[in-house]
Figure 1 (spheres, rainbow, N blue to C red):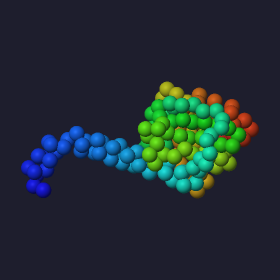
Figure 2 (figure 1 turned 45 degrees about the vertical axis):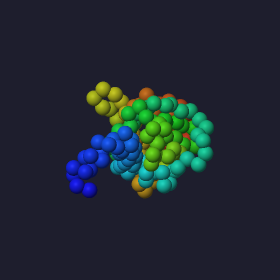
Figure 3 (figure 1 turned 90 degrees about the vertical axis):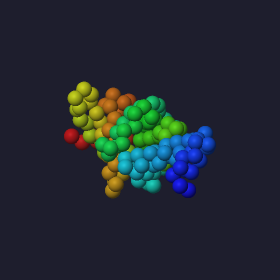
Figure 4 (figure 1 turned 90 degrees about the horizontal axis):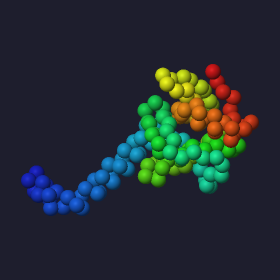
Length: 153
């Protein structure tokens, strides 16, 4: 197809081509974020096998591996079994819900410019980090009870 024919094709079929293009772009970006942030690697080991039963906070933010920001799209939860992570439905492609046992989570507190943060390092061998605000982490810690990991300094 010559460029002029391709342009003519797009002009005539824009309403059909644009949704396909947009959906492909959306899914591709979601997949790249999953790979770069480490969610995909975690899902191989910690995919939730049943609906989560415990405390959950929706519309939360976090940062995985310093490269993938999840702004107001995370659901974070905790119970005595482990740390629960899920993405909002629109961003769920390549982001299945996760349940990571507390035995495979390390916790470290830090201070930023304006807020206090907690970084979870998840997975024994793969060590994927998730940074969230300390206030949310404190709510999760209350739900985990004595199963909460010993915090590192």
